[in-house]
Image (cartoon, one colour):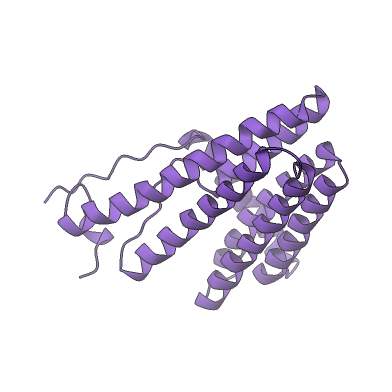
Length: 217
């Protein structure tokens, strides 16, 4: 059996992801000192997601894009605070993941209203299914004993695409085409990520290109 790590590709550069996580690792110290719990941050993240959806509903893409960034920041911080404050728990994990799904739904619901008379509405439906499958395949794989974090279009990539399309689209007055492109990328590559994770478990079960600690023994 090979012990090399499986290759995985993401839209965001690995160095950029690592630097961002390291930065928020330091920021999390402040939240721990303020005794802000990770579940509180998860709830605020849900509220931020609802705000994003409302801002899309009100046709305020610039503010929506900034609120998407806030969602991403809170999504990172709740996990970092949980670890640093020694409050990481199974309940906290499922609570956070569940609120993330609701938050994503509210964001896409606002976009669905904005594009209600456009073909993009169907892309949004397909994209929401894809993002749900990304989460489901990881959870199902982990339930089977595999640490399945591979995939090109994970939550961070989806948030970055939405924020970029919103902010640049608003600034250059091309919001609709910019967001349509972003949503198409999210829809297509989310399903590709779900397929990647299914294939990963298949390889893992056969013992191909997966470290021993990735398998249930």
